[in-house]
Image (tube, rainbow, N blue to C red; front, top):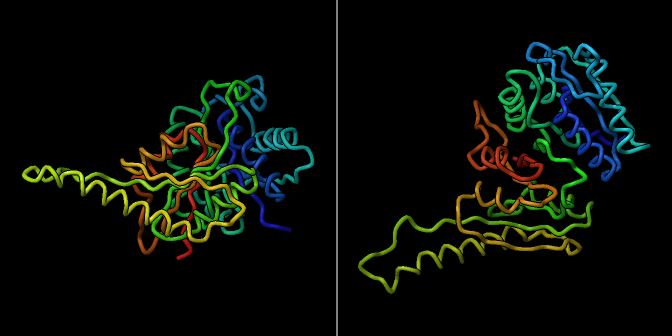
Length: 288
């Protein structure tokens, strides 16, 4: 059996939207879905469960949360193989451990209770930094009704200087959805131009853009011929550029270096897109 797509559940409405996304992704990949609840969530949780899970008193056990999430996943994608696991551990430890045998790990961006946003943000950041596989963070849609949103199409990927696992992940995501892939390379203007040579003032900017275009082409060296590819070089900080390009996309893909001894942590680009992107974000570790 292929490795499962793992999704961390906490019983909240935003967490269940992550289950919806994961069920759809697992069905696209033809792999099973594994729902994991780390029971030490309970030390942080408030009473605000999703209506389909919370009982009359606003409470639910870990088994109730998993049962409700599984029913939702099977309703969303009938026939999808779904398994559940109740683990008596912290969510960060649990999901990082699960990542060792997973196709990918999916988490939401917000939990429930007084510390909801900060807590799940911490869980998502920790898992995205240390997981052995790709981590997809599904941003909360707030009060938006999914049926009212325009269809999301296309995959966006932030490129490095060479082909990377993030590029391969993006290619496969585009293939599965039969969607175009937009490869983005951000570049920066110099902080100041040569004031005493106005005729040369635009040259540094032009050279930087040309360098970005060459770097983009190098990163796309392994592009499969059946992927509809769009190239964009955009001036600006990478985090802001990718967040803006993500508007209306189905998925934004970025890479990360695997942590060495004592670190590193996710960089500024990852922090920016995880907080400001308009779509789910996949953080894909490098091979090294």
